[in-house]
Image (cartoon, rainbow, N blue to C red; front, side):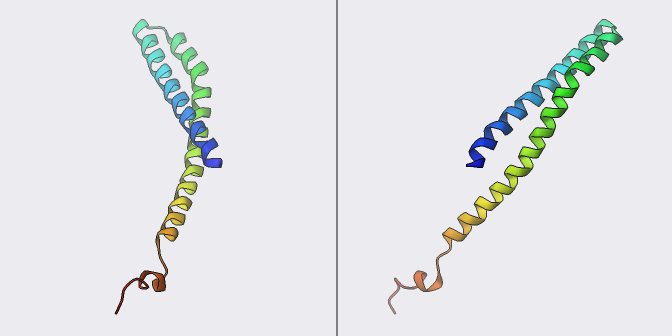
Length: 93
C-alpha cells in the first residue's frame, strides 16, 4: 500500500525538480544574455529553494522505494522456490 502512495509522489517530485532546474538554467542564461546580474540572482533566489526541496524529497523517496523494491524481489524469490520434496514428487522412479 505504501508503494502505491509513494510512487506517484516520487514521480511528481522528479517532475518538479527537473522543471525547477530547467527554469533556473534558462532564466540565468537569459539574464547572462541580457547582461543583467540582478536577473540572474533573482532567478537563483526564487527558483533554487523549491527545486532543492523537491530534489531532496525525490532522493528520500527513491531511497525508501529502493528498500521496498528489494523486499518485493526477495518475497518473489522465496515464492518461486519450491520445497525439494514437492519438486521431486511428480517424478516416478
